[in-house]
Length: 110
Image 1 (tube, rainbow, N blue to C red):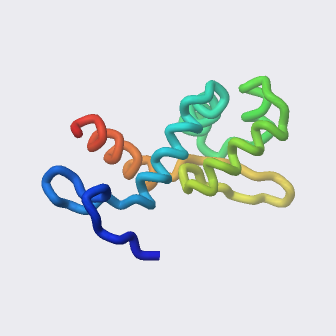
Image 2 (image 1 turned 135 degrees about the horizontal axis):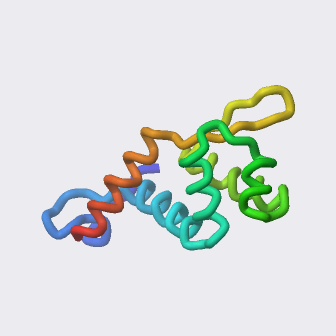
């Protein structure tokens, strides 16, 4: 779906705002605002290819809560998953992490 151009989706310098990326950034920021979402992301960043059960143990949250947050991060492509039988191992998506960092820097300057 193409976003129609109007004053609401243009920056001060007239460049176009990518509303899809803006919505994704909003979802990521909401996840990171929560204590558990922030803890999970920090654990995955420090421990490449860590299992869901290990993340659950380190955050002292239930497996289902941990799995739910990991699913949200996966759908937003913030983390990548490697499956090995019934186990899932999580790691940061370096490309996506760089995009998020760049977006945050851009928003901070605006």
